[in-house]
Image (cartoon, rainbow, N blue to C red):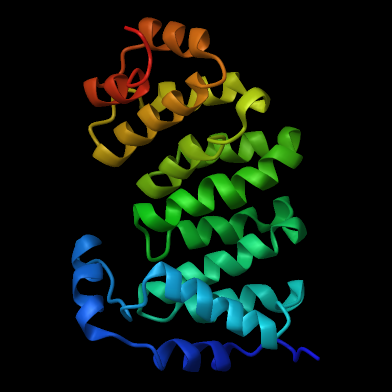
Length: 225
């Protein structure tokens, strides 16, 4: 019989697998923004499987506090694990959880966390609650935090036919002339992904909007010019 969730047990499990030799290059890959335990994804997946075979997922009432504890840890693997717990519980997430997800986006911020939170967690909430959440995401796109801006640009990444093109176009247009690399890349990525569903819309958007060269190049990467 599984026991109630135990964060300390998870931390002990991870600490037992510290690998300084792997931690150094993993941190270097992330521009030394975070220290690492040195636990690569396959092992991290296996350790999480062990944890979940012995312990129940945190209940919704406990989930936020568990995520906060893991997000306060210095090593990046704990942040990944916090996000994974939210992914596993995403059916329980509602529009009321968007402020908390924004807090995560703006904490320990880098592309590797934001690019999971935005389409997989924020996007899932928006997809199921488009009328009430679209204005929230447009407001996110107007903030000064570049990672929240990037999240707003990318949150519809996997929507395919359910993409709100008016919202997508409005958000991208607001940042079309941005000099920020991570914004330019996200614009190109969002457009390139939607081109798999409606390449005519993307081609028309690119031809009628002044995008930075990087964004334009990324958007048209797999399309006939």
